[in-house]
Image 1 (cartoon, rainbow, N blue to C red):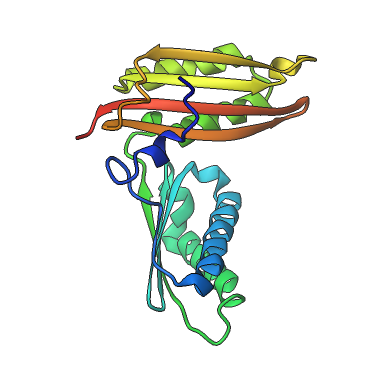
Image 2 (spheres, one colour):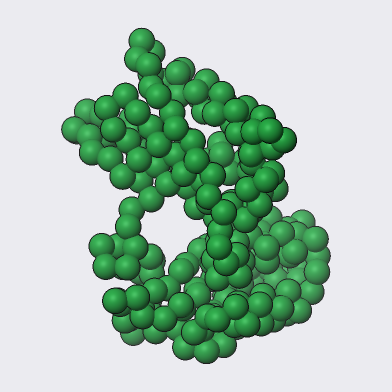
Amino acid sequence: MGQKVNPKSFRIGTVFTWDSRWFADDKRYKHLLYEDILLRRELKKRLTNSGLARIEIERSINRLDITIHVTRPGVVIGRGGTGLEELKKFINQLLNSRHRGQTLKVDLKVEPVKEPNLNATVIANNIADQLVKRLHHKRVVNQAVERVMSSGAKGVRIVLSGRIAGAEISRREKYQKGSVPLSTIREEIDYAEVPSLTKSGYIGVKVWIAKGEKI
């Protein structure tokens, strides 16, 4: 059986909820969707050193609530909250250029990730960063697998694909420990895919983390 569905979108409504929560008519929908994509892209660039895991966006009339989940909240907040104020000012400038003549109140929250070793995005980013630094891929992946399992995961699967270790021919390598039941909808499975832009080429990093049944 081919498992080609994103494990998180497959479980929306039962285990997970949407990262963007709002309603719009046909005319406004495409503009708000693009705005969400733009916000996530720009915030990801600015918060590379903070261990960004997830961005939640919730909209109501003339109000935008953004919740940023990071492993190092102190880096985002800054000394005396200066970093948070600068980030809020940046978001306002980004949005005001699109909402001309309309005042949009932005509420920004920073939430720490309780267990970084059980977050697929954090693990995938760590692996991608270490591959860029030309560390040995097997050692990097095996260390990540051990960290995830020691944090209480039921199972973990990591897949690398591309010119691994600078090889002439691209290949795919799969590492797994424990059980990762992708067809079980009530199973809480965190998933992330991150590109590692190495000197020899693009290496794709995919991470599945099974945390057990939630329902």
